Length: 178
Image (cartoon, rainbow, N blue to C red; front, top):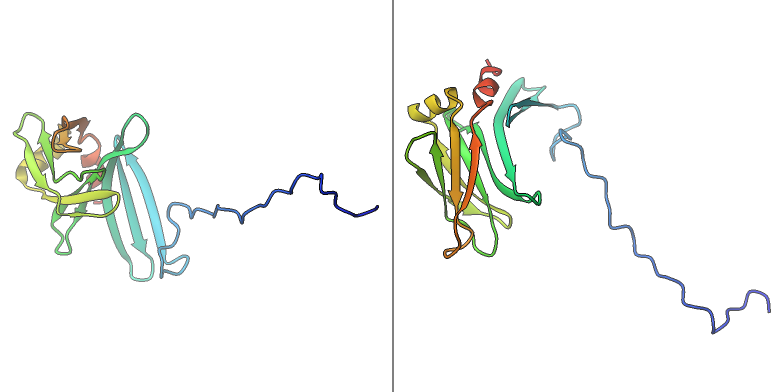
């Protein structure tokens, strides 16, 4: 019998709609922005990355210098960015990961200086963030390309996560903006 299906035939596989989509490239227009309205510039300075978004219609540029640190598996461990408040004051935005227990503070020690403890003020599903105003001592640490020790806890009873990094490259990123 031609075209008949035998009850001995194995069932045909059912395919779901593709679960993939095109990921927009770095620098893709932000939601609500027309293509071509914003120019993004990304520039590396040692272990820091300078990202500037320029609104071409308003002739306004917003920049931040960031450093992201991942663990041996490539998972987010810590990041921070040097940005400016709406009043123009420099501030570090500090981010630590959220796990089963969210870190409540991050300790930063610049060079041989005492550790500064930053309270993490808000969290979402993946990270908590806090802020550190840039004072004269921190400006000197940036100019000196100081080493930095980062410390936080993943749980109240766990040993602290300890990360060694540096400010090397940050002064160059700042200087390039002038």
